Length: 513
Ligand code: GAP
Image 1: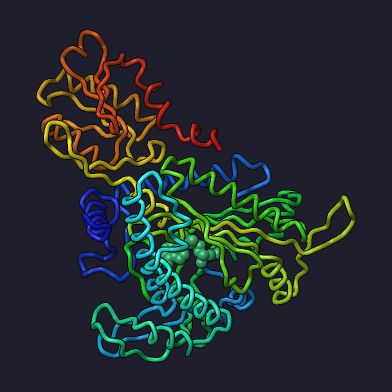
Image 2: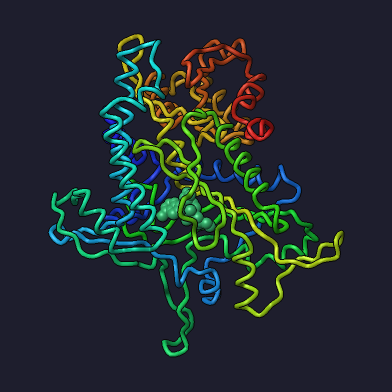
């Protein structure tokens, strides 16, 4: 199966098993808006809890808030979003489809990278043990040719980005022969800027109504509450404010399922520091955030940093944590050194003094900020795409399993009486269920054969299945089947809670951080 096919299968699986549904589906859906079903919302909650606890429980100097989506419109002028939160868009005149010009170029560069990697893989296969990748990349004519092409386009692209040169974007697209995937033609319009903020009006009468924006990031809700939190919490620099909440962007190209949505959720933390210390804190937060990701056990090799060459209007250093999605390495989280841009501008626009008085040095200053910002939905997609596996079993059958890291799996254990028409078995299974449900999200399942029930639980990623059989009535033991190894173990009912807890307790993950 190609990665493309795998992705389609994953999207269908998410729908079939209650993870993610297209929004407003009975009205044919709404582009790039998705709803989370009974499994997806549990998974999302668990991811949010892992992040929230890692931020606010493990760090005494980080507190959480919950600010509103609607905010004073001046905030978005101060933050630079009204003037600069734009994407370069381009239309294909034949298909009438709209694209982001920068994404077209980046995808083109990605394809060249793929070609180079394929050549390297071929070389590796051919030369085996004696393969010297560095030398191969430096001397192989095919690699050299592709690399030259890559560097030329890349340099032009970076220069165009820096200069905000929209005409050059179009010229690169034309020169590289990038065609519309729908019409197959190179018949492009000029590139134009497009502001991504949604607006609506607030107020009871049309005359008195104010245009306000749906927040495109949660960060500004933190900045405008900086003074409130610092004063009421008696916070001393360095300290952080964390927040989880919805954000909205009118994305031009909203494809790839929940990777790029128009309504999505962010987990953001702004860390307030003394000016001049920002590069040390930037480094520290890069390490801390990577550790949080790798700690989930989805393979360190599936993450990498991508340092920004073009910095956002507010940053003096920035990097992305990229994850290997089915469509390649893509941004999962952004870490930015935002200087005093936001607090400084809010000070200017609001006319209120936003400063920190340092009692040790007796000086006041506008704090600098390191931001960590991750999309909840992208994290859900990272987990689901990494976890989805189709396996051939020894008996010739196959199974689909979601090997979701156990502490964030939606359902932790399924309790099953061997048969449903035996009252004693059913009673004991329900007794176990009623006991375990206070500690874990459990499912009770008595329908179909045990094999079918195992498959259903595998498909939603349940780490443990607990079967109550006739012997259980006598020896008070049950069969516990492990999702990943499929091994079965007979254990006393009294030991169930400890066994499950060892694997699924979120605190065990947090303790490793
Ligand atoms: N406050 C900084 C900020 O918003 P960003 O890089 O634009 O930075 C941060 O966004 C994260 O939010 C991204 O790394 C991504 O995970 C998520 N994100 C951004 N736009 C998104 C979208 N349209 N759909 C889903 N997630 C998105």
